[in-house]
Length: 346
Image (cartoon, rainbow, N blue to C red; front, side, top):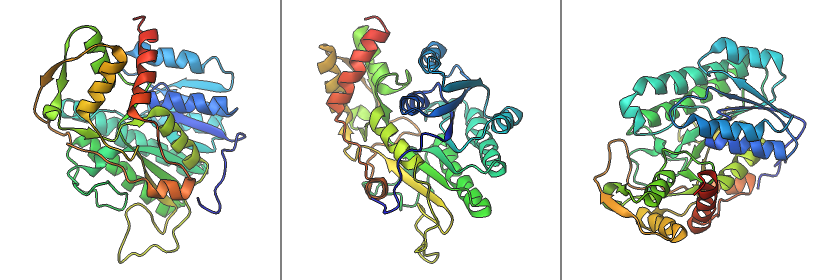
């Protein structure tokens, strides 16, 4: 662990965008549990069931240290107003248009939210002396890379979806602001996050619902997919530790042999993944086991924009903040199924 490693400061004010989303909700909940003050922003868009987002918000709003702002990241005036009215110390930008496949249908949503929205956050950080900007990147930036495990030192200039391209763009934009204005920025490449309160457009939710309804599940790439499935609590623990430890300029940065994950500026990129890829068929078997029911399977080819395998190298996360995700898929799916049955009244 870094010699200057710090614990979470409970006296800071945290601004979480996408607070009604899967990761944003869980992060806000954890920060509130730690006694922190959280301002959460969300536009409650209908990319997936708004009632699920509202149910998450209801839980957060029970805590008087949580303040919700209903606004869109693309609304510069609304974003600026939040910063003017609150002395925000740390920003965690989790609001984004999510989903690889949807980017083929509605590309403009990704530019508006992930590029224009992020620009408004960067400008607000620049003008309000924010101590640290943490933002969601994605494992999808690795694109057609076949070096396993994926390292943050790898070149990621060959995205295979517009979603991935916008996430890579966020990293480049963040670096520019770290360089020009000295803002410490950390990008987090999340690997297939799953767990209770998860997104209904993700495989675990879709599969569970279909199996319980006796409907066939769509198994892409004929089941020959591998994913570094990462349980939500592990993701949140990683985010919390990183938030408290903003990057410093790397004194050993070699501009003749550059490492894309670090810089002469206060900039860093980490993977947060389980470091254990699981075959899609094994993942399905675990769902079947916890539901006590076999799935009807429809085997289909690899979809445009998808990659066959993801696998995170988390050595620098372990080195810098002393954390490695370790929840097994069996344990994580068990917790999800338990939550799903309760939430959906099964």
